[in-house]
Image 1 (cartoon, protein in one colour):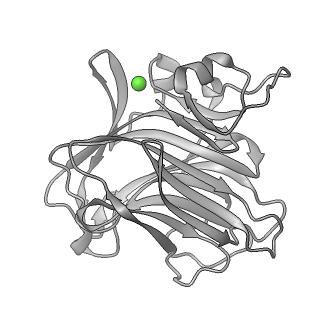
Image 2 (image 1 turned 120 degrees about the vertical axis):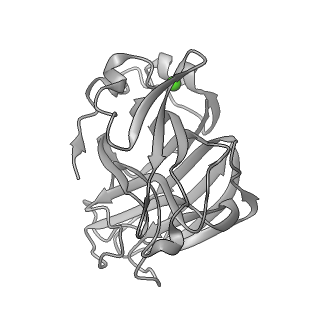
Length: 262
Ligand SMILES: [Ca+2]
């Protein structure tokens, strides 16, 4: 798995850092201000932001004067071909919010479980790997009929392949665009189960996980953007019937609880 240098995409806080109330703000205002703790930002509107994102399964597309990232999900024997990348954040923090837009193409097939991007720390455990104090991850998943969940590899997990907290009153739908926000607050100490993860869609909290022991070490914090999206899965029951697509835009990761609308 390659590491991407976020380089020019980082708009880091300056010494004029102002107190920023938890709440809802506009993306443009946030980034232009340049005074907030932005850990990662990419809206794909300039060449440096688009550089490196074209891969076998990812392509930059211009649509109505806006650039966005198209993900192509190619059926495989265990869901769809894995689209995974890790971006190191500009600093290690104890709480952060990942915000992004996702549009499911009108012909998208949810099938069974599939992954959407999240945050991680240390070795960022995923993929049914063994528990380790050195790593954790929190991502979003879709399930049958677009049911949405928070999906977490934490220190006290019951399932070796990650635990989930499922939204009760929300489903993703093909053909629609959503603003996803995933807030993570680490446990206060390695042996204390008081971490929090909250999932918002279009600014509305749809699922939350409380009392989670995410990190098992004081030096393992939030330091990675996990760009993960694929169907599956361990067998072809997770696989779409054909190539299907989503579109991503306006990635913004900020320190603290910042549910930022596009
Ligand atoms: Ca864009």
